[in-house]
Image 1: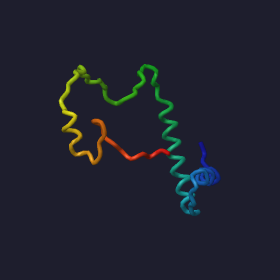
Image 2 (image 1 turned 90 degrees about the vertical axis):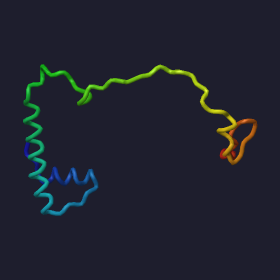
Image 3 (image 1 turned 60 degrees about the vertical axis):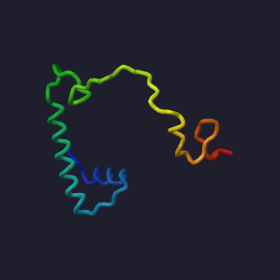
Length: 95
C-alpha cells in the first residue's frame, strides 16, 4: 500500500499532532515499512495454529475457604479515633 503525505497529515490531525515537513517525509517511509511488514504477516498460513489468549498457560491456584476468628473486636477498635456500639464511627459525608 502506498502511503502519501496526505495520509500522514490525516493521521497526525486525528492524533492532534503538529509535524514538520521533514517529519512528514520520515513518517511516510516509516508507515510504508510498518504496513509492508503487516502485509507479510497476513500472508502467513495460520490455519493449523490454535488461538492464543496468553503467552503462558495460566492456572488458578485456589485454596479452600476456612472461616476463622483471628481478631478480637476490641483489639481492632482500640486505635480508632471514634467508635460507637462496637463499630468505627466516621464523619457523615452525604447530606
